[in-house]
Structures are given as structure tokens and as C-alpha cells.
Length: 236
Image (cartoon, rainbow, N blue to C red; front, side, top):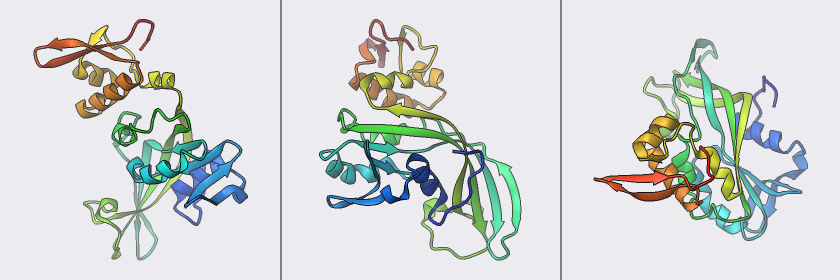
């Protein structure tokens, strides 16, 4: 992925990721059973999911019994917001968004697949991106509310401009990547949230996933506070 990526015919974020993970267009949009797979290649199926991962559950249920499936879900670590007049096409403003996604902000999405994460056919990839987010205003739109902003704009496109990293979760040991640096020997959800730089709800979901993979275990309670620790030999 280069530092400058042009807009493609389909929504840019999905399209760019699809061509990045499989440059051979003949392997795109292939029928597999009752579904159309984004990519079918030598290593199985790749599904690009830019929306919530929970939307993919029915499709995954059908595909995981057939072959290996890699789900790609982007993390937008940094974004530039470009506001465009919908009538003239003129760029009105360019500003940097204060919003920064991390693996922890995507934890609700990951947690929605918790019943499938132990499947040996499933791999999750989280490319970490910088993007330009184009917002159009001044025109009527039937876009769903989630795509509209309080300023009367709607998100018309998201264009990746740089790939800065990638997180891959496949084997149980890969989930050690979710352990933040600086965890004390015994910790609660609050200490985990502080070390990870995330909210309490995201911290609790992450801890529950780590318990399922054997990377964290409960040690007891202190009042109403549940305490956890890392099994011997696990490093944060």
C-alpha cells in the first residue's frame, strides 16, 4: 500500500483493502457455497469488513466449515476530515480529527465474534491506517443516520492514505498482543484500562477474551473489585 491511494469505483476503503490483499482481480467476488467471497486465493477466503464484525457472523458460520477464512477489519488510527460542498465540489475545510482508533476501541466488534475465535480456520487481521474522510454537505441524502454528522454533513467516502501497521490474531498466543505494557502483577479492570489507554467497558471485554485464551486468569476479589493476573511465564 503506497502513501497515496486514489479513489476507486466502489467505496474506497473496502476497494483499496481488497486490492491490497489480493492484486489479482480474477480472484475477487467468487461464489463459495451460498455466499460471494470478497477474495478466494491459495490461502482460502479473505473477507474485507469495514462495518461492524457482527454483520459478518452468518456468513462466517457458513464459510468456516469449508476452508480457512481471514477477516480484515481496518483500524483508523489517524484521519483527516475534508469537507466538500455537495453542489459545487469545492473543498470548504480540511481538519485533523481528534478521534484515534486502537485495537481496544474495536474490542466490541472483536467481542461479537467471541464464539468463533477458537475456530482454527479463522484469522483476523487489523490493518492500521491513516485516512482522508470526505464529508459532503449542502445536498439531500438518504444515507442512514449513522453516516450523517451533527453539522449536516454525511460521510461520502473514506480513502486510505497510509498503512502504518497490522495486527494479526490467529493462534491463541497471538492474543498476547492485547496485553498492554505496564500491567501490575495483580490488576483490576481499572488498572488494565489505564495501561491500555481505553475505557472500562473495552477493558472488561478485552480481559474476558484473554481469560478465554488462557492469557489472563482470575485470582479473587477485593470488595466488589475482581482481580486478575497473568499466568506464570506470560509477559505484558
